[in-house]
Image (cartoon, rainbow, N blue to C red):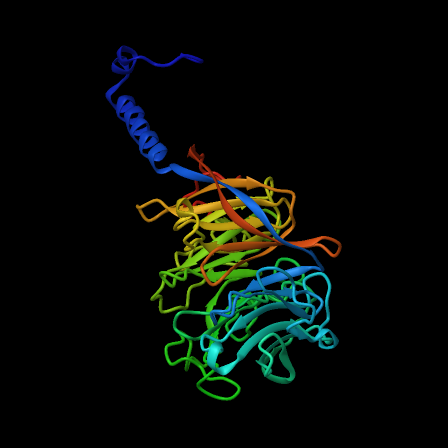
Length: 418
């Protein structure tokens, strides 16, 4: 009966087969509603510092100083000491950097033993348009690095000007992870992300302490494979602009910027042996891209959540909250969108899936997230005139029921288009 609720008598009058189908759907709906409802936390933002020029990465040195290091795209790293930005940049390599669009000084990572060895690492686009990963050292002044201490670990040729990736992070294993985009253009025309003979479109993993300029960890998944490069840890990425490790569990979250329809978050549990194929260019999110059908024979690792371009156009990966100031955010992975300023939270549903909910709609151009030493989470508003850093704080807690699919509701990854 169109437009009316079917009563029990009407259900009973159906055939046994139809009754079973209807009741199966009813049970599924109840279960889905239970999965897709969670206590989502309303968040707010607190301004930390303004007046920055194109802030693009946020890091801490884990040295007990409480300082926040802010990477500026044009080639500087500046220090926020808890009150102000210090007047002299920590590092200035603007003369080495080609900046603009998706190029520039893209991230900074501090060695796990920075407090004793003074080493930190940067990823930048050089004046030839290629990716450089280099190590620098702090000077005798703890607030100023030695610009003459550069030691280049890797130079990777970039065929196009976009999709440079750029994130550097140390895992709990002590190895340096490097996110590399597919080389650019559109649609990965060289199919780099699925080609194991190039570093493009990959997550790399190297040992910066085991050799010069680096060593390959003995358990890297393609070590010794003549058809693959030893540095590769995972493949099938389009532009993993921002990724992060859960500081409590060691799990890895990789936010991969989409092509024209879908933005995605990929997940690698701690203890993984590596070698995951996250699908690009075969798939964009959970959807076939090239080819347009029959793209997944079962060997791809699908994202834990995605959203379509009706709500955003360029994902900015964040962090799983492990701070102490906002307990309702505990265990929530926070991420955002550069184009729309929306911020979402994703949390495990206890059954092997993930739920996600939009937590805040802002007007910011969110270029990056970062953590301080205590696990509190910040993000940057990218602007050449009013760039700024904000801290995420709690708002009110509400019960949220989200619908499955794109636009920021509850999503459970499936291979529906595979």
